[in-house]
Length: 381
Image 1: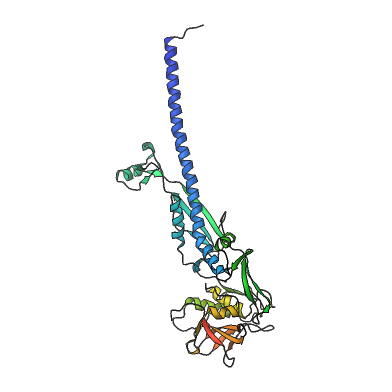
Image 2: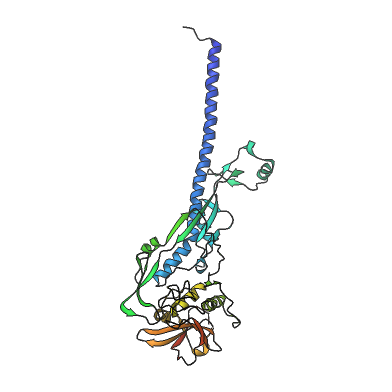
């Protein structure tokens, strides 16, 4: 057996030390890679939370409407009163992230939100990685970030993006057995959304589970304007014409929607969501769906039927009627049986969906013996 020479031993020692140094360097590299990977994962979690949180106010508002007997389908983000950027940042911060830029909402209802988030922590750059500009920033304590160990310096922040959407269930009224409403709808006994009773006596937690918020891959191709949607049977809402100074924009939109339905056929029980001038269809209007959807286009949710609209509105004396107020007719055992929307208070003109076999029309209510008038929004007066 050959004996190990002295220089052979030195070489072996050098090799061992070299390998140890390489392993240490590799450990540092792998540690930095692992840290970067953890930051990316945490930042994606923050982005997911921010996107889901951004659209949560719309889901919660829809649930609240359903619990109070109102079908929420068609209500958009404009009705929530929430600031979408604040909502996103709140949930990003809870997950150690910061929203970058503005939240991008899409969909006619603003029910889709795309959020970009940067990590709250950063990975500090080594001295040899700094550019001349970054060295200057470091010396002047500008654009610094803090790593997870509390050290400040110039660093990298992970970034991530997420998109979330509110998915509304189908909501429908169940009518009282054997009882019909002459205005074209059933007298509602209860409201169901996604197979869950919403009203009366709905359970908020159970109802919230069918009003879903989900992460999605793509934005909605339709833009969100921040204003209530609304189109007539042939396109955008028409000009509502001259209205008194100070008429609220919401009232202008409600009246414009009513004008857009002129000439469409009456349909008993129709939804007033896609009225036709060719024939009566389930998408055409009856009297109360016309008034309901007119205010839906204005971003205001009101009940579906005449019987339920009557107690919902604030009753107005005839001398104080304004454009946009509702006018009720034909008192019955459960309340009024017909409703229309006032479009010219001075000349006593309304738009109504009258009855089967007739078209939506603009007519006077003089000589019709109105039962009363009501305002479905808070005018402050």
